[in-house]
Image 1: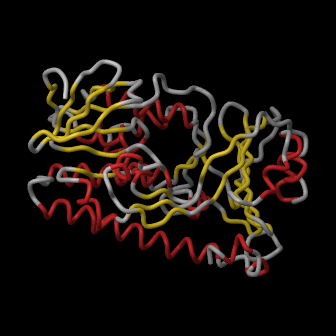
Image 2 (image 1 turned 45 degrees about the vertical axis):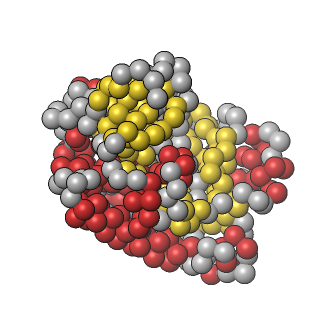
Length: 365
């Protein structure tokens, strides 16, 4: 398969929060290689900015919490919702026993994890967009097309995000893939805008949210079915804004703001069949969104990335893949997470009973 192999203890495919947290968690006693398809890490604002207060424990275990607190992140305020009823419901963030959480500068957070993995001794290779995966004995081997380098390790981890491209490529079954689409834009906030609330509203065809994020910006997002022709009618960002302003709860926060370009991304639940991870081959794990992508309504995506990375690190330290109990414990833990999440998700989408006969809501409830 190429030239002399470079040996590692663990190869992680994907330098997102899950992959970088795992690399940081496993160091400094192992040789860790993280391979990222992008040649450079993006710098523009990114959606996926919510971090619950419970994540503080995970960041403390990574030794990054103090650095996180010194970063450019906004503590979350109260949540205002119009969901089950047509009237507003106010939930004070201070009631959360883990603390209110944060609306993050997501790019800064990603850079914190990247620096943390490197500081711990992990090797990060960027621009690894084309490669071949094979086996040599008990090792996984990856040959990079651009350099013909061969990297081998007994453990391979898919941290490629929602696509779970490596797991699917290796034959792991898909349990669920919800065609939810997120249409979003970033708005420039007014300097005197002191609204720290997260605003969430359901309507007939989906649900909205808007919140202020760092750097004087506000995110506005709408979640609807990907096959719904409605989103194709928004030829310009202002069309999207006009549609959002039909809802007073949202309009109050965005009425004087101008949008940037419209952006789109799949956002629904995606889940591998956790019981079939072994079908990929011995020494394979999937973590973060590659294993289970959380619906944005849960605000748990980043937390899950950090938590599943910690669970995978525990499995590796417990002797995975030689000790079958280590894999079984990881699967049991992730299965419990998935079961609990799906129960809560179904309950949430059953909430707006006034829309029970609308296709978006009925298919999820």
